[in-house]
Length: 260
Image (cartoon, rainbow, N blue to C red; front, side):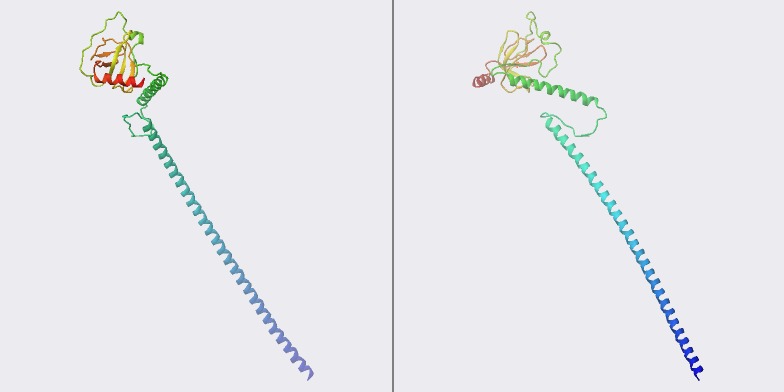
């Protein structure tokens, strides 16, 4: 009976061992499955993070490109505004420098002329006129009170020198026509007197180059000086000699007395 009991006990041990082995195998299988699941989850998470990172990089690049485009646009607008401001400033300077009554064209302002010849000629004439005006201004500043200023050659181009244009003492002067009033556009000299060299001194009116009533002396005349006559100098300048009894002459004399 003991042998049979031993066999039964061994059989039970084997059965329990088989069950334990089966359970261990099931646990190992479950552990492997869990590990595989965790690894798969980690891969999915890594892939999602990589995709998010790539998306963020692309968005950053788009934002950077948009910012660069906006900056370039603002720079272009700033340059256009600066160019417009410079053009407006140049136009304002041109208007300020223009003489009263001058005609100014703004067509094509700030652009390069296709034909620069006429502009250069005009610019040269304008510079010459400015130099002449500065010279006259200096003479006026340096002139002493009561000093007479010669009109000879002012604003005109003399064909010859003063000596050649002035008539000699042996040259006979022409007689001028007596008028009641000064012709239009010809300056009037009041309270005039003829000098030894054939010139005339007096007070000038109606001249764009001098103030009303300013004391002047002309260059020698080629026409006899007389009341009511339009005289002419050797260079071609013309003046109306107002009769000494006229009211304007009296006013000029009174103005000179007050000034002195």
